Image (cartoon, rainbow, N blue to C red; front, side, top):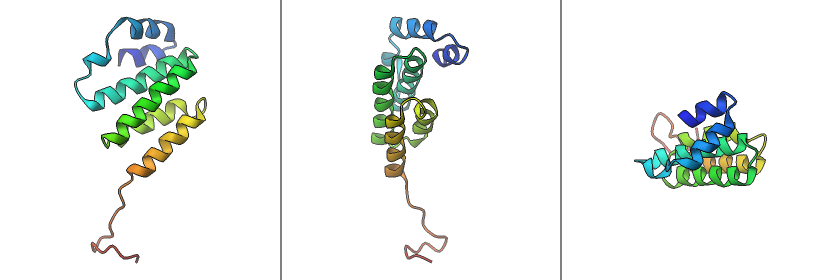
Length: 113
């Protein structure tokens, strides 16, 4: 949260310094936290114009979200990168499609109405 706050208050250089000096990944207790960390890392790096490293961080977040069925991690990636990293945005959209669970109709039938 602290890193995101720094980025959103236009202090990406400070966020980058903190990112480089702290072992945040090792502090992640859950897979969801690791995915969130990668999105945050991507946001920090993108704010500092390090697009190649930001792209790698966002791709890691998408992979974690898809592998562990955590679709709620992907929209933040989309919001963060769609305009500056359209290829990553496309990967995120594809991952959401693959995670989509088809809804059954109210009667429980699998046939089309």
